[in-house]
Amino acid sequence: MAIKYKIVTRKNPQDFEAAPKYYAQLVYEGKDNTQTLAREIALSTTMGKADVIGVLIALGDIVGQHLAMGRNVDLLDLCILSPSITSTGAASEAEFNVKTNIKRVGVNIRAKRNLVEAVAKAGLQKA
Image (cartoon, rainbow, N blue to C red; front, side, top):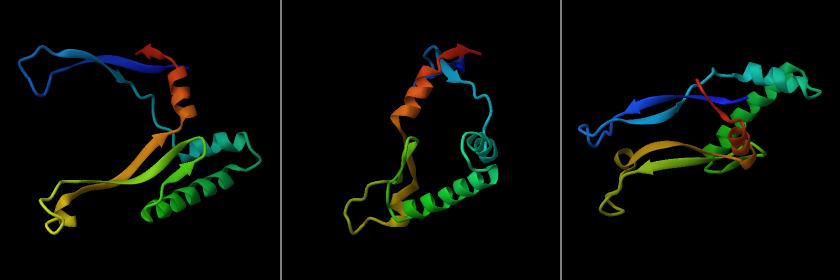
């Protein structure tokens, strides 16, 4: 099992006169959905595929609710999810306006060590 990559050239966006450089870019082999994961989980547990799907759907709902409350969510050996915001500065607290200074509301995902190690151990293969 290896992660595939290809070599691509990119120009420096700050200096278009500079010679392009070569970079590795991942080649994604597809996308796995809830059905695929549920089928695999069902094979390694006593739950059926429908039960697993129900749990995954409920997990998504509950995680969203907890993030909306401003809480971090630690998902065992997967990741830690945290709500995040990005804003621009204002000259004073009184001048800060949520609609103009908040640029993005999102979720940060920090993978747990075992996931990072699994990807690192997979190896690389040129596509």
